[in-house]
Image 1 (tube, protein in one colour):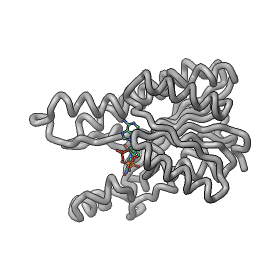
Image 2 (image 1 turned 180 degrees about the horizontal axis):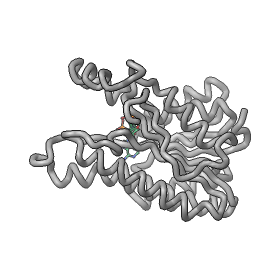
Image 3 (image 1 turned 180 degrees about the vertical axis):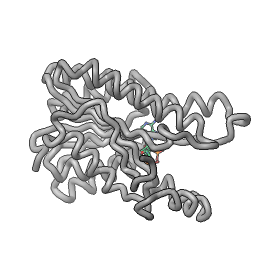
Length: 246
Ligand code: NAP
């Protein structure tokens, strides 16, 4: 139970990778705030974790809205009394070739993927600064490192998260707050399940370990970066990609 008595906020935690991260941190003793735009699904996920006798509290929030983010962070502090861990996981895609990409599709992806993380870091850091400790993990993507045709908005937002991670790491290091990023590769989720078989095979051909990753494998990397075994690590990007990029 390496996270006993700690409080963790995870955005986009109602399903997918965020849900796996919430479950993993909760099983290590953390009380988890399940934050998601889909409040109903967040409640179901929290209930599932409570059935395992874990502490999980659901919150409805659009991470792109700074006011909502601030309100939810205050509510978490009043409900759970502290914030030790923040995982900025909420992310969306609106794919399309650049020539045809609508400015609204660009803006929406940036609002959720990049500004959402900024909103939560800005709001949650106040409590972490009071506690003089904290660990933040931003979920980026290998697409933020290498780019991808048809995903300029997603790739740029995920690359932006790396700049945010490194700047925040430098700014907060003297106050005991560590900030790192995880860059998953091809992970089996609902996001990737909808890809055509041909596209999946194309991706897998570029993975030396020759398989897709699991949500639990991403959660393990997050647990390492928020736990005591990484206390001398900040400003880093941990790829969970089966060796896709080296
Ligand atoms: P997912 O299954 O689509 O789950 C994302 C969750 O975030 C959903 O519950 C979604 O709610 C929620 N969400 C969306 N917009 C939000 C907003 N504005 N405010 C709050 N919550 C919001 O995605 P995933 O595959 O688990 O991916 C999780 C993260 O990993 C994302 O940042 C993604 O970019 C990154 N990632 C995924 C892969 C992969 O292979 N899957 C690879 C690299 C990186 P709704 O269901 O209502 O939209």
